[in-house]
Image (cartoon, rainbow, N blue to C red; front, top):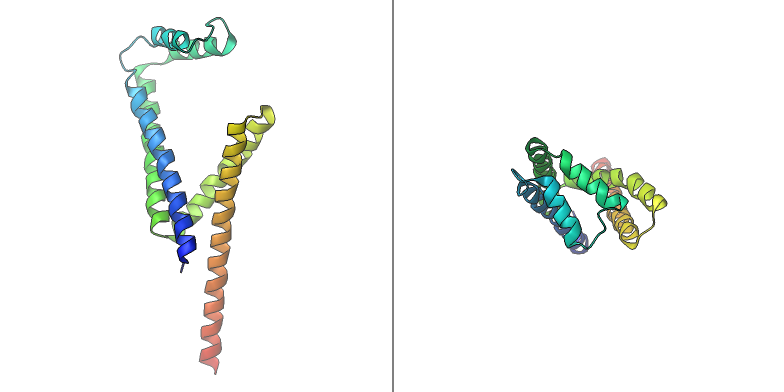
Length: 167
């Protein structure tokens, strides 16, 4: 049984997961807005709108990548975005309702990103990357603590039942 304090923390994490799912879902719909359009021209307009030099490396990478994008690629990326969002929303439901499977899923899915976040931070340090890593470590650490605490309480309750049955 979770305490009211633990319940609030789980709900906070659930809202955070729902937010991540919603952002990716919105991005997926944004990808669909590119269907049937000249992606190369659109990429150049985005680069100019953001006041970036189209001759620089990263704007060039973006423009070339957009030139290679087909409608099938856009549909595929939007589909993956929808799938990712659905997974986050299922996790949100489970965490909101205090389901143990969701606690396991949150711990494991968060832990998967830690090595990537550490690598990204090692390549180039930014406050955003550092904040993402710290937040992810807090969530993973809390979920692992909650799972071990739940296991400890369950074992204590079983031991108490055995002790009372033996008396």
